[in-house]
Every structure is written in C-alpha cells, then in structure tokens.
Image (cartoon, rainbow, N blue to C red; front, side):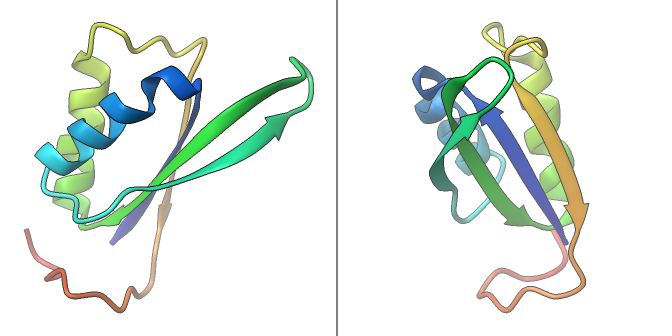
Length: 90
C-alpha cells in the first residue's frame, strides 16, 4: 500500500480528487498547509491505496493538462499496514 501526497494550489483540489476517485482510490483527505520559502498557503491532498491504483493515479496526474511540477509537489510513501475496507490487491 502507498500514500500519495500532493502539495498544490487550492484551485486544483477538486480535479485531484476526481482523478483519484476515477483511479479507484476510495478516499481523498485534504488539509491546509503554509509553505515557507514562497510564503504561500497551499492544500495537501493525501490518498492511501494499493500500489497498482497509486500508479494509475500518478499517471493520470502527469497526463493532466493543468499539472505543473513547478507548482505541485508529489511524495509517495510505502505503508506497512492500512486498516480499511479496500482490498490490498487491485
């Protein structure tokens, strides 16, 4: 299982959620963050899902016309366990 975390402008949150749900991710968590350096408020979208669904989601992000790696950061983490109703396999 993986956690995918995106830090991005608020205007992209609905599109990120739509892409995640279309990839089969069950839930998208969103929260506020303040990023020092550029000193800007951003949103973090976080999903926890199987590796195969995480790949589908990330591929759809890279294919999105609005996606700009200069404006959006993506981190992934391997999770040892998630207690959820989602099956571990695809």
